[in-house]
Length: 252
Image 1 (cartoon, helix red, strand yellow):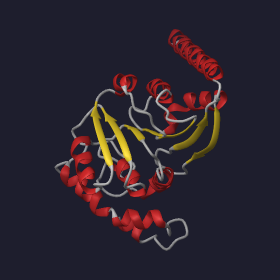
Image 2: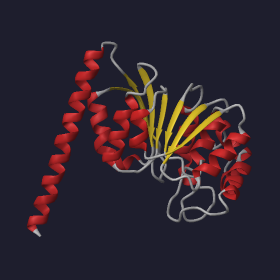
Image 3: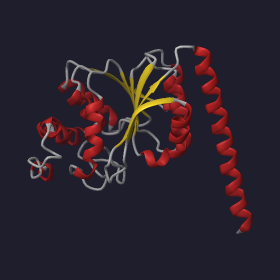
């Protein structure tokens, strides 16, 4: 993390998050060791680009966003754990966090979460190896913060979002979507249908993230009507997408 260390006195980087990140450099390196010094080539994370296992300062903005929004959360759900780098950021902010992590592959997630649980003994980490769409509908826990960073496809994230809002603990719930450019259709639908507050895009040049808070109406019937409208709108968006694709095919 020499690139961060060299910038630590600059206004953008001279803050609590940067110093905690530098203190956690050992965890970043030890996770790599626990994963047998391997990673999935081309698959990056909040902390590295998937090409070389080196700290990625270009993603600093979204790293700090996740850090700041993870503080004082009671129960967190993370979809997509990979090497546990986003989980590490959450634990830096909230070492007493209760976190449920879901990933379809445990090659890296299992050793990473096992290591982090050992290093942050006051936390409670539950790792589930599963397809998110299969496990979300069967969860009986409630959460106040969702970090969605699994398969970066609009259709999949839409389904994950629909499951997650049914797992909210309160009438106010917070989300972070990673790599938000891949689900802009969903984001536009959410912003047009739900009562969204405090939305904030990271200014990272690397796969920007989005934070937002949704306030759900007290009257359940209002929420159900909005949810139905949301599903209908997504259905027609999908049909329109297919028609446009078919039209381009015929022209060719």
